[in-house]
Amino acid sequence: MNPLEILIIEDNPGDIRLIKEAFNEIQIIHNLHFIENGIEAILFLKKKEKYIDVPTPNFILLDLNLPKKNGFEVLKEIKQEKELKKIPVVILTISASEEDVIRSYEAYANCFIKKPVDMDEFIKIVQGITDFWFKYVKLPL
Image (tube, rainbow, N blue to C red; front, side, top):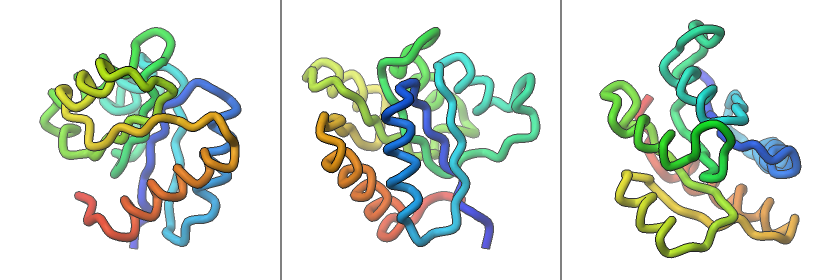
């Protein structure tokens, strides 16, 4: 069985560390790929420049507050590309704004989750994401 390819688009080093810690707990063979800004995320997804040989992710965890190109712009590009739009995109962001929630779903996000500020709760949230998406959901491979 091929490993699950998971793209994490996140610029906060503390959140990256917590996400790595939470993903270490899952019992599914996987590879994590971390990108820290929106422009690099699109290059990765379109396999351009230094990302020509990267695997296509099976799942994307996306922050909205990214440098260079924000998460809304990244999400919109993902969902407009025939080869990418089937990839589930979960928004994991500090925002609790109803406008951000609506904009995310209007751009076809599969899920919107507010990042908790408590470290233990953050790990629980990420583990909940992994439990749901990798144990119960059938992902397109």
